Image 1: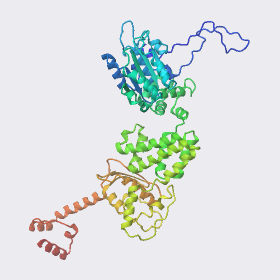
Image 2: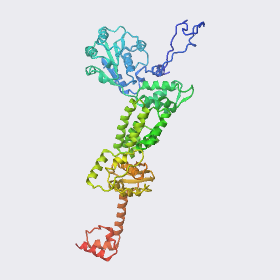
Image 3: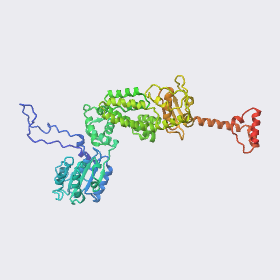
Image 4: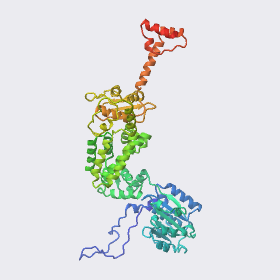
Length: 594
């Protein structure tokens, strides 16, 4: 058995011989329970698998390396400040430091962090909290200055048994200003036999005068893959079967806290009968989470402005137990994922390939400005859902608001359209409002857009060239030119376009095209920008045709003779040079003579 495995064992609680069962039924005599009949008191996983040495600490390699080097070289500070969020190991590290400072065995007679795997003379008493020279204090219950002075009165006395007198003060930020002042002088000039270890989750509330006299360690959140590996080892040691998806869900819900992850695992182990495997569905139901694929569907319908589909999707999730706040957090995560994929690519998302591909397509279809606007609205809505008396109703209102604003023009587009309105004289009636998720979007956009003739009925383009023709029909000259110059079509079907963007393409080209196609055709479109595999743009195709015609013209004997007779002459227009009429040739010769 390795040292690490030895640390995971629990000593059964001992019972006094001959003790009677005080909860036995009246009139029933109970015999003294033997060790085999006495059930051991259950210890939660967070306590059972608490690290017993620095090698057991996960996710804090930088701090462990620094402490090992400090103890190896004898550069041990007199005060340590440990800070970080809940469950990352602050109190555990403080107790390990207290053991390391007072470590002593038959062969080791100096402070050591390398030998903690082997229990020393003082380790058991320190772990059980009964050592005379290690005082562990909760600052939340001793905040007053008199209590702090009473505690510090014993600093000047030498330790009774161990090498150092160690003061471990947890949640030190709870001390009052007067208590901090009482601690300050002792902390500035402590006796050589005294060491202080502070732990806090609110480092900003600790005075800088205290911080400047401590060696500070910021314990960071533990990454999800590290937590998953730790939970898998614990589940194996407990003889439990749990799927990788379930471990991932627990690690994500823990938000970097190892203790929270172990507590959730403890709860998950009792969700199924003994011998059964714990699935992701079981953990998702336990945590009130929604299926990620369904929340991505909800996000897609939301950004397309489909109000009815969005509310229906949320109510389906709510009916199976999804928490409204968790749904909002998932939507925020999807918005962040789409933005991240737009900036860095799908490899930046730690998600399954299908989910990463869907968020990447959304990021390509939406501009950075739209994603930022959706993020801000979701962030504000999250606070509303948390404070609302009916969170589900608050989510409904949020979805309506977001669907309504899905196809509203951004500030840049509105300003540009306003400039166009002031420079172009209005003619004709404005566009009528259209039905759908963003019912007010067209009404809001109509006064800003150039008036155009409304065709009878809706049109459905059957090719990319039809889309360009639509832009020409509706007099959207800017979009038409961008489509001809920057779009290299990859695939086209009704409702979906995939293209490769040519160099220099506007960042909001996909969003503009989605918005205009929805307005022109009356149905939502998905436009995705991908890399590689695209055909030529219309402008590139036209230039290639012109170059081919130019080359064919140069191959004509008559043209070659003309160019030879007039050195330095150039072909300006192939159609004029290729005209069969004699008058056209005479005009060309006259131009060359000039």
